[in-house]
Image 1 (tube, each protein chain N blue to C red):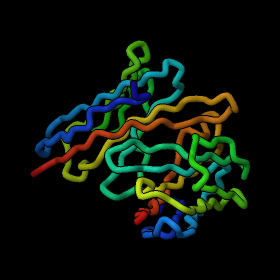
Image 2: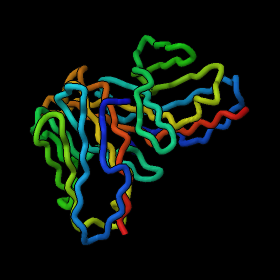
Image 3: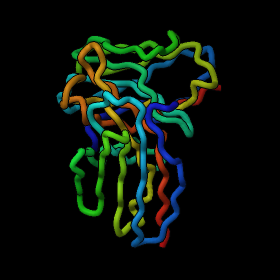
Length: 116
Length: 113
């Protein structure tokens, strides 16, 4: 519906596991984003990619590792997470990362992550 | 001080009521402003942009006061389907030439029959 898909929709993992979240946008956009949404908290920007180049790392711990192989795909690799990392992880895209073209972001449905 | 502050609510209103949400932001250099809507366990979706001159989209009216760093959203003739969390969002330009959306924590609206 929104042109941005995310898999898996739900993920339960232990603290020693390694998993990856996948995002794909079908909108021809040049910018992609990862956000974290914890209960009762605002969305927090994690990473911004513009034309496959990372332009923002919002002080995210190294246990979160993003990858953008092309402008349509974005991954978030997870390893040795903590229970407090349990949250909804949202991917978004916009036409560009700057100017008016960055104003409207289209979100995927999110991956609800639980870390045991 | 939070960059974007909103009353979390919930606002419980009957169908047909008029309800107003307010939001304040801390960065006077913020460039553009929006209201997003987020349904329970769903992703945020853009509801409308907010302009200094005020703008209206059907039953929804948004207003921006740059001097007071204040944004509002008015919903007239509330419908059951308006029940959602309304996110106030500001766009701050970054030194690298790209923008960063700052989200408020949201105001929850519950419209009842």
